Image (cartoon, rainbow, N blue to C red):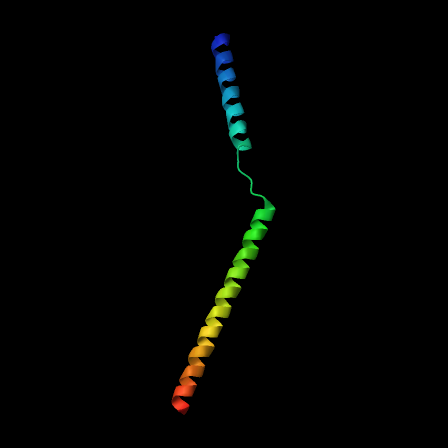
Length: 69
């Protein structure tokens, strides 16, 4: 009977080792990559706002000129 218990405990130890090995495989992300992504997103939104503002100002000014003339 002791032999059966020993086999079971060895099997459980192997499972525990595999779980630890899988936990070590977790991917990590570099902080600089995340910061660069945030900066690029901020630049992109700034460009969108500038283009939208220019289009809106052009539309308003063209309507004003149309109604004045």
